[in-house]
Image 1 (cartoon, rainbow, N blue to C red):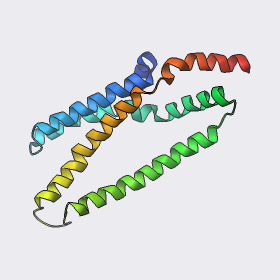
Image 2 (tube, rainbow, N blue to C red; image 1 turned 135 degrees about the horizontal axis):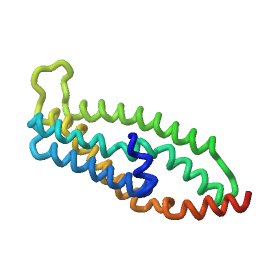
Image 3 (spheres, rainbow, N blue to C red; image 1 turned 90 degrees about the horizontal axis):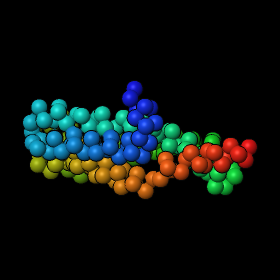
Length: 163
């Protein structure tokens, strides 16, 4: 996280997030070599480094959105944007936790059971690797459409001239 600010300042939030998500995908790819190999699972934890740009920039992206909204509409909605972001995190955390339980139940996971069925083991793998990989890929696609980094200096200059 200590390196996120200088990296995003130099390369932009969008590019840092895309590269971070690519690093995350590499970590998951290492794990996929052999999901039964503990050493590869540990090596794949490099994916945590890839999450630093999005975690470090999340609320900065909201701030950029506030500036853009003011520039586009003339209305500055700081409270609504930040409360919407906070609400999104809370709803996402709740749904993510529920999804975890639903997928495990669908897979036939037996808590406290000794051996799990093949479907339960696949559900665990899906939650640990496949689903997060898909979300990383989705994040990359979404960030490819984010162009506010390029436009932001002109937007801020325009807003400063109006004030």
